[in-house]
Picture 1 (cartoon, rainbow, N blue to C red):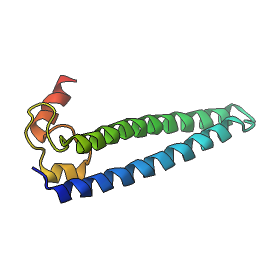
Picture 2: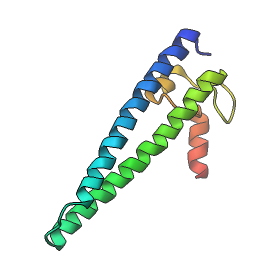
Picture 3: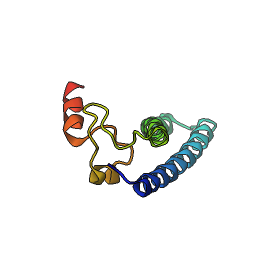
Length: 117
């Protein structure tokens, strides 16, 4: 189990990451809107802008998913269930949480979950 101090450390890391993602999302969204208003001179310009925009959209989607995971982890900290695997209800190793602060599963259950999907 995580100590109160460790929980607090993870909470700070999660809040910092959330702030960074929100800043990225607002910056990328205004960039995309700016690109839409550009005059594209030919099909090549349009193709380049479209490809870039698809990549940006995929990144935005990934960041939105991560934001949802972070919010879930912050709720778990509030409820005292942070660091507990959602499948087996065993503690998630601190090393795993260090790598992925919003991990929902221990390593074993994560592998099972990924195989099922």
